[in-house]
Image 1 (cartoon, rainbow, N blue to C red):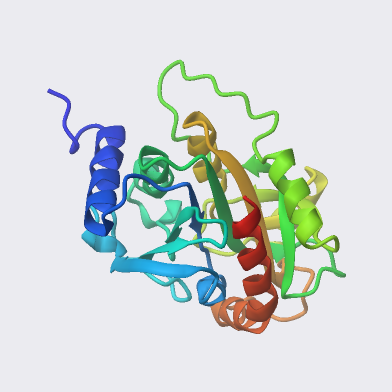
Image 2: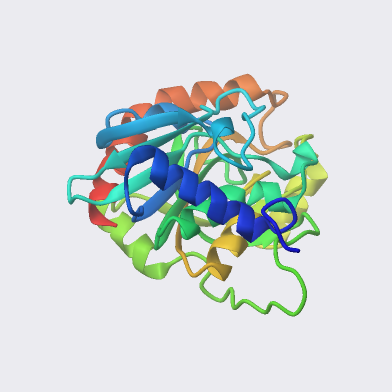
Length: 269
């Protein structure tokens, strides 16, 4: 018998039912996953309707990475839409499996969302993309060797990241850059040779999240807007060793710009 313990989609449906029941709503309209450096930027972006620790929802665990929040926040946007903010995510390198990585995306879809904003902190492959620079993800390269899809599940990823939503983001902030995000498995940072490889392959950004969630979101029919925050230069570009502390510091410094971007975007999506 298929149960929530054996079927990831059944578990997502259970989490969605718990979410809507707990907050007394029928559904949500959109969702945001706030990655490294982004949690602080979510403060005050809408009317808060409620909040709970992520681990209190079926299938979720407390984030293990510093700089992530660890809560589900429910807000109402200026246009009256209900948005779920996941201030933290499960990373592939945690070893909990792909289903755990994409559980938040599938829960959002099961709760009624039609669009999702996936954010992350990442390394930049261009010397002139300074830490604190937000970049829209135009496309991605998945180097994890994994996928959330099973069996003969053929999903078209020609437009994995919605051109419509990117156009909206450019209306909000015409200075936004666009780039190709390359996901490595992690948790170690990339070597200089790996950074050079990613650039040769067409990458502009490197990180350890997002692509698996995007695949699951497209399978579920969600429009995806991906936004990376350049928190550090990639290995070999910067003369100094990489540290997670600089990821957190870059996110903190960029909070005012990120908060303004998210506040207006949520009203437009």
